[in-house]
Length: 115
Image 1 (cartoon, rainbow, N blue to C red):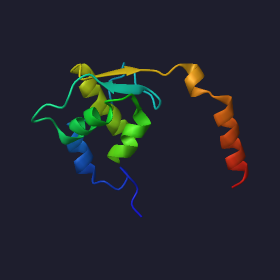
Image 2 (image 1 turned 135 degrees about the vertical axis):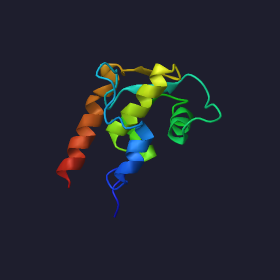
Image 3 (image 1 turned 90 degrees about the vertical axis):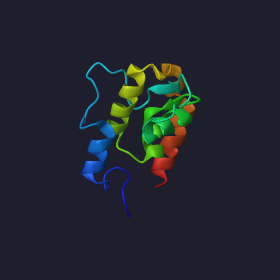
Image 4 (image 1 turned 90 degrees about the horizontal axis):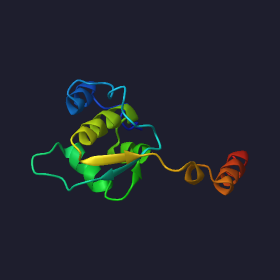
């Protein structure tokens, strides 16, 4: 069984990010940051950038984008940093009330206990 991102050839990941392994230290991204596309993909864009813009037509968490792309979160953050710098996406943190729903946490706890 292959693991998304982990079994990719290192040179592929290097090529995707132009050799960068981390996004800028001042980037606003964490796993639950919501990303929204601000424009449609343009001809000649990198295929991963195009895929992100198509996925993020509605707000989407970074962790979901990474899973859909089958890339490590760190690589996804680099790609998102490029799009953010170009003004092609916006990023915002969800409200804490939306993140911490006691009913969902209870369901997760029950599910974990049943394992």
